[in-house]
Length: 585
Image 1 (cartoon, rainbow, N blue to C red):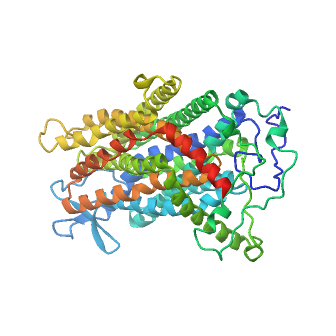
Image 2 (cartoon, helix red, strand yellow):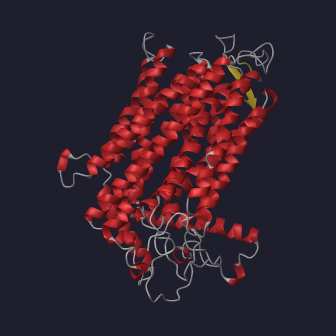
Image 3 (tube, helix red, strand yellow):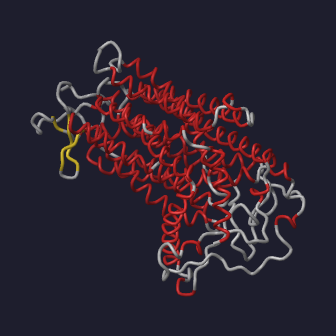
């Protein structure tokens, strides 16, 4: 029977501990649902590309400068004249450095922005882990996606009300917005494997939905829901809380032969590339409008705040199609024993949070059996941290050392997005082409080798900054060089976002999407605690942000051999064994 988009989307779960991808909702992924998933990227991506990548670092540094003093005497203000109406520019005392009081210490105004982002990522990691249990169990995945979208939208709109005297409030808004975006990204990423497995192009290849008996057995044993017992030891209680497939159930993923697996990979690559391209296109449109507005209003602090506020409006408005068109695709509800009843909403919230952390610890312990997942996450931890830190560091470098205005910096962001879209499409097609040539030996590049090439490309940026120590003709001494490096960075970042996310979705065990993507988020967003903190420390000690390029260069060398020895095929086989062992437990 064909189910249309207009039919009732309510679900009737059966009494099993079935996984997210099994009996609970196996309807084919509709085109409307795909558009709803793309809409979340269209709504949220301008925040990380435009707000976090360009406007918030500029605004935080400028607000700190408005309250800063010269390093030479710690008394002379960095700026003179009106504080809230002048254009955003570098201090007139160009031979001295500007520092600001932050929690009882004087830090470089550039470091203030870096430390803010570092702290925001730490909070983001805690929130993402805590919410993963609720995202895995019940109908919370979509609800969490929409809640954090609303929170991020509201906090970004409130930038309109910050002033130089409330620079701590601006930092708080940046933290809340970044935390919300991280949570939204985790929920959105966790939908990708589910949409792929239920996609008609994949399901039609093994035609399991033609016979409902293959999906829901005529006899279903009365198996207990996953239990939660706080009296058990930490690790011992976790297998009972981890969902598994009953022996009588049919797991569609395990019925895939080589051809079917190939189709699933191709669909995953295509959807992932479309998501990245949609996000960058959305950010491009918003960035273009922002540049026009900022340039027309003289690059004032007010113009920056207005543009940031509109980013929040954009985020909220375009989350509506996600709310209307995406199915919840729920996992099994988490059941508690009598002593831990979830009748009380606060007790239930606590139970889900504790369950999430216990599950994460258990998953991390068990993930050691997945050699390629461990390799991937370690390499991704470093690569993601470097990519994020390079962006923030380069923007602050251009503002403080090259004295570029916000409109010029925003135009750099547009170049990054244009080439990011090209990179996402190019590497997505390269990945799909590689998977379409099975058993072709060296002539068929593996996905991990594509990631290696991306890392090498990103390394060009810190190397070019280091060259500036030896010559004044090149090496980031002129504004035009920023535009060239923006093209290189954007192309590499677009490819990284497309290939890396798709590659990881292949390596994770079926039915553990939210849990393993929470690990992915910890190594992705959580890694960015390290990079900004170290670059901020280096800048505070040297008061020369160029020295951070040495750190970024040597840090980027580490993931190259890691991704080189990664084996995607072996990782897929290990993921299947992982699921079988979880079932046996």
